[in-house]
Length: 220
Image (cartoon, rainbow, N blue to C red):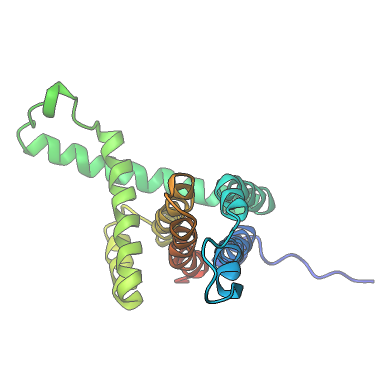
């Protein structure tokens, strides 16, 4: 019996992040189910009934397990695609160095800024490089919500500077969208009533869907 060589050493992004995408999909379903546990009994109650009893257990369970579910999925993807992860780390080191070089050049030709408010030190070159990547991911995620084509164009512009790769910008955008969704979910613990908790679960879904789209996007 012959076997086919593994040609997916450097996989497409939807393969590279398959476990994460699956976990995000599972979380979307859990959010919808949690909201249904609140709205279902209300819909089934007779029109004249007041004080319908609903359960917040599903909402609280989702809030308590969502971050762990996604963290485990990311770890599994990392373990599955070691060669791809190694290449990503090499590229990240290169682009980080490029952003640091730009920041250092700017510092050399521009006057030093004064300390921040209350004497807080301004970001170092290394910190500024990391902040630039985070900001790029946030902007791509924001534009993707409105117009994916515009977001794609922005990624192209960022890559052209030599300070970013398409993959790392998209990965940062995935993180941004995911964190926004997780924030909505975790806020269910502080919801003043069951309906608000259900709405928070539902509000998280568009952000999780966006994260899936970004994790699946592959410019290659």
